[in-house]
Image 1 (tube, rainbow, N blue to C red):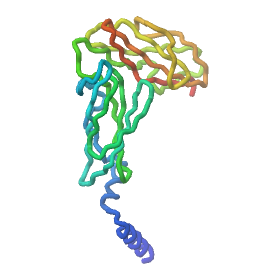
Image 2: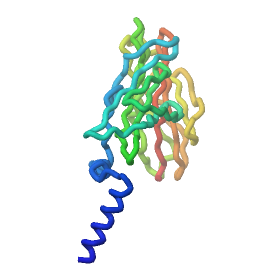
Image 3: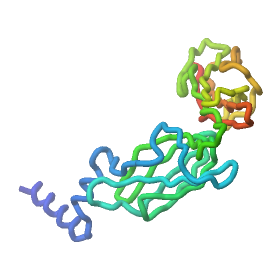
Image 4: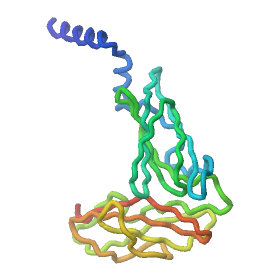
Length: 230
């Protein structure tokens, strides 16, 4: 009986503060994923938008909320995956027009009031397609990003995959080091691997690939990571 009175009192307090219990219950459902991202789509090569300059395009991000509750104001977090720069955009609506760098990979997510949130999606912003398109950003093949290689390893072979619709890739620049923004390690690699890079047990390494084509276009991969026996 005492437990029932406590529960009734808690409900009464919430109601007296003007809190909608249905909203609170809903916001806690499905681990709080109650904002649905719509566009740009996850793992897509986005060719939409409006060209702003030779290097930029404007894209309208779109999302929606589940149920009857509007979780505005919203915060859209955008991360440039080439350097991990993060910008947060505020919006009262379920969309936001943002100017992006072309030929760059991004991730994005949206949060709102009452602890509402979305998943995190990623995409590659090609921008409106020209006659000659830039290469797609390279993907890590070995080691895969986040992997741990043997602590007895003294060297590592980096392998990646690059693709281009025009089939005119001419080379790759490898950035490698122990910081989250690795420095240029070697330029103009014609293949898609680089062997025998010295590593030390217990260290954590970062690397990325800039892919270049014959038209002067470039794409920058996300920053990949791996540890040595960690």
